[in-house]
Amino acid sequence: MDFIPNTDRNREAMLRAIGVGSLEELFADIPPEARLDRPLRLPEPMAELELQQHMLELADKNAHLGHLVCFAGAGIYDHYIPAVVDHVISRSEFYTAYTPYQPEVSQAVLQSIFEYQTMICELTGMDVSQASHYDGATALAEAGLIGCSTTGRRHMVVSSTVHPEYRRVLHTYAAGADLKVTEVPYRDGVTDLEALERALAPGAEGGEPACLLVQHPNFFGCLEPVADMAQLIHGRGGLFVVAASPISLGLLTPPGAYGADMAVGEGQALGNVPSFGGPTFGYFAVTEKLVRRLPGRVVGQTVDSRGQRGFVLTLQTREQHIRREKATSNICSNEALNALAATVYLATLGKRGIREVAELCLKKAHYARDAIAALPGFSPAFGAPFFMEFAVRCPCPPAELVKRGTAKGMLPGVALGRFYPELDDCLLVAVTEKRSRVQIDALAKVLEGCA
Image 1 (cartoon, rainbow, N blue to C red):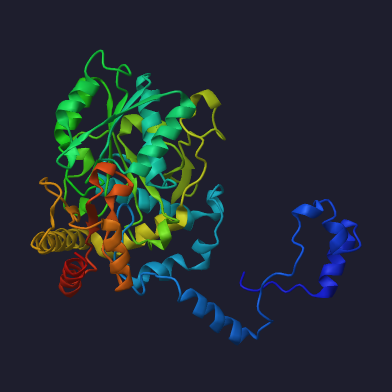
Image 2: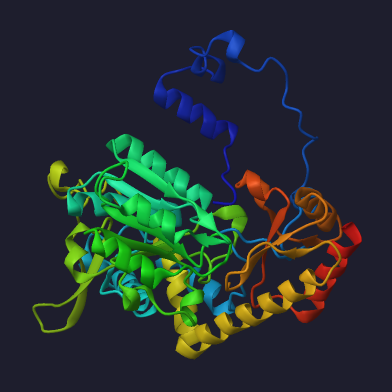
C-alpha cells in the first residue's frame, strides 16, 4: 500500500484497544540504552509533490541499468523483456492471489502454473516439472538431496565450474544432512574429466557417488562435455544433475536428450528483471521415475464432475502433507509470479523466438570476445567453446576496469578473482541480445583506454 493514514484519533483508539495510555507506555519494556535519544535526522515535512521529487533525486544517485550498459552476468542477466510480460503479471488476480490450495477458486493460477510446467518440460526435454523453486542455487542443492535419498548414498560430487554461490548453498545443505561433498577441479574452463573419473572411482574418498552436479554452460560460460559426464556417473550408479541456462536451451541440446536425471537452474533470464539479484525463481524438472521426490508443488490436469478440464495440486512431497521421514524437502511454496513472468515470456517468444534470442546471444558474445582479444594485453582465459559469457585476461586489475567502466556508464563485467583467486587477472563478460554492435565496440574502447 502506497499510503497508510494514521491520525491522532486513530492512534489514540489503537492505544486504548491494547490497554496503554501513550506511545511512551507502549515502548516502556524497551531498555533506555536501546532507545534512540535524539530526533530522527529527517528533513522538514514536505508536500507530496516535493517529496516525490526528493525521492527521485535520491534514487538517481544510484547506478542502475536505466543508466548503465550492462556486460555483467555471473548468474543474473540483462535480457530484453517484452511489455506484455509486465502487463499480464500486474493484473490483480495474479499479482495479489494467495496460494492455490482451493482449486475451485484458483483455476486461473493453477492453469498458469500448469502451462509453466509444460513449457519447462519442453525446454529441458524432461518428463515432469514442479511449479517453480526459490532460485537456481536452492534448486541445485535440493537436487543433490534427492540424489542421496534416491540412491541411499551420502556422497555428492560437484564440478568447481558450477556457480560458486550455488556450491556454497550445496555445502550448507550437505552440512545439515551430514552429507559429503567433493569438488572436482577444472582445466581450460571446463571440468577436468580425469579428475572427475578419480572422484567417481571405487574407493574414492567420500564413498559411492549419489550424484554428479554440473552447470552447462558453466559459470565461465564454457560448454561442458555433458554426454561424457552422464556416462561416467551412470556407470557408477549415480544420478546426473544439470544446472542449465534456460536461454541456452533455445540452441543447445536439452538435458533430457543426453541423460540428465534432473534439470535445474535459475529462471531469471526468462522475463524477470535483474533487480539486484532478486526476487527470481528456480526451475526444477526430472525424469518420470523421480516425480514422487520432486520438492514443492506440482499442478496436475484432471476432469471435474461435469467432465470439464480442470487443474489441481498433486504429488506434494513436502513435510506439510506426508510423514517427515518420507519428505524429500521442507520447501512449501513456489515463486508463482516470477514463474508466470517466465510463462508469458516463453509464450510470447515461442520456439522460434527463444532460438533467435539464443543465436543473438551466441553471435554477439563471440564478436565481443574477438574484439576484446584484439586489444593489447588482453587474451581469452580459456579455449573451450562458450555460449554468451566468456572470461578474458586483463593487463590491469579487473576490479579497476569495472570501477572505471562504471564511471563511463558501462558495467564491463565481473572480476573473477572474487570467486577464483587463481583468476584474479580475469574479467567475466556477458553479452545478451540487448547489446548492440555500437555498445560492444564502446566496451572495447573503454577497456583499451583503461589498460
